[in-house]
Length: 203
Image (cartoon, rainbow, N blue to C red; front, side, top):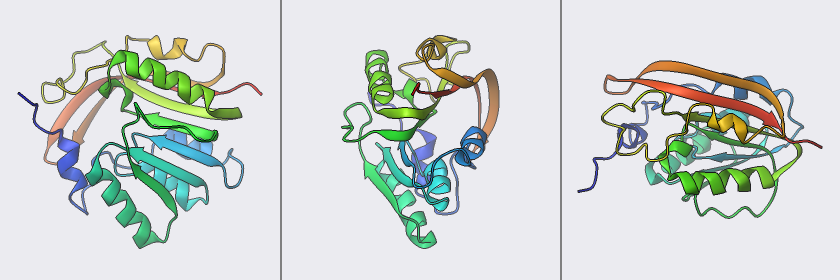
């Protein structure tokens, strides 16, 4: 039996609803440090809260998500704002890297794919980050059980602290382990243990 669709699919279909709110604080903070027209990849971009913010600042943004509704909404908002975003429907597990990027983001989605898949993907992400470029990765960990409505989708939860080991040979700008409580459209409340890293590739 297939699990019901996650809550964000419904939110993506409502023009006035935002499934995940504003751009992430660490992305806002890093934007001023990026070179003009920096090449940015947002893997698992959803409806584009981070991709749209970065496009507004003139960066060369590619955004990829498996949700057709999410990409449709992103494209619509980008068009309304006159923004150029390369928005693609695609599965990040099999997405082909055809260039290197100054910043690659994967925010809140890697735990939604199988462990072997995200292990391989993280290595490709690192390989296709330009020297001196950044990765921003945030994931849910196994420190707490996922909420019942998301349990069928959290098939690749990270072990607590596991994300940080992937960036031991990079310059770590930010390393966080914390718990968030949030409310999504429709009054859905969740508690999530999060690991987050902002890391810079050696030159």
